[in-house]
Length: 244
Image (cartoon, rainbow, N blue to C red; front, side, top):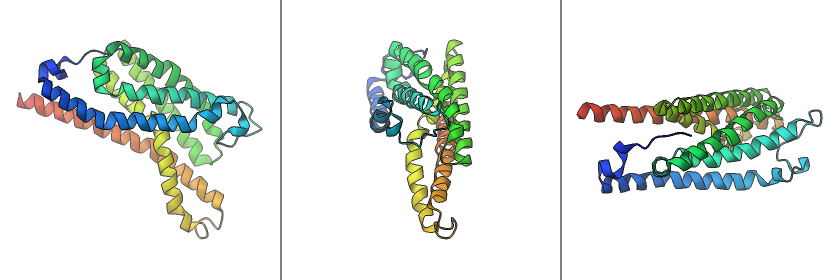
């Protein structure tokens, strides 16, 4: 996506030691983030590159022939969004390679979020884990598209501060699919002792409840963390401005 070089935070403006220290701090979260994203894609993507419905990790409803092609499209384009987004939110990469940042931003939007978001709108209402998951995934898709479109428009208008804020929200929603896996495992562990009581011995009902809760937790909590991150940055800038 279009960007500008933040001269006020470059080593020339803040001093080389401060610049190196900031780069090291960023590496502490940027590298693990990228490694997790790569590991997730390596695990999730290969079965769908065969285009064989029998290898799908999700049940494929035979009554909806469009489901599997849309699912494959969502996973392929979503993988592009996940990997490209890791570089887009890395401040050092954005400042050091502005041209690459712009091209990867276009890939994030046009070859990632936009087609993946459209595809999932046809997949989410057919989720095998029930109505709660269907609504949660549909809302996620709508917000994913909305935040990304807003970020793209801000970049086109050269409103880079707003662009950055919207794209952080967009990437928070992009990564929800990764943390969803952790939430569903946690909820299954928490609900497993209640199978015979709350769920009347119906283990499938328990799994649907865990899946529904994990869908909502994954993107709602991610958005809240993104807003906290943005507000913390705003507070720091206000404090520096007041101290100047």
